[in-house]
Image (cartoon, rainbow, N blue to C red; front, side, top):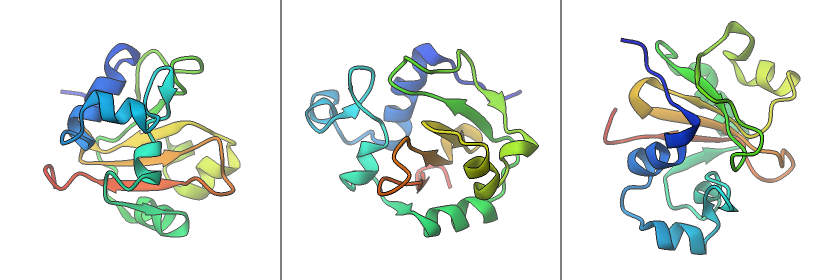
Length: 136
């Protein structure tokens, strides 16, 4: 069965899989909950989830098994895909994503086992790479 995520439940699934120890109220206070309450990737900035940043994140993404991975663009619901797509060859490494100019872009490992995030702020925030220790 193909792994799929929809815009309507992306934030909830991200929270459930990567940030289950934090209340929605706390995430909103820290601007880590979307829509209208910041960006999901702020959880990495606040170190609420163990993550790699910058070149380390890019290297981790380039080297991880991407079998079953999906890609999804999500920006507080304004600039978002309606449904995820299987990871394309155009986005299967960090340099390709960078060269494609993608922002607010998430690549998610099968069943939320990991996540690579490219933000709209390339000079300081990200990219980030998260491993879901509960799924690895």
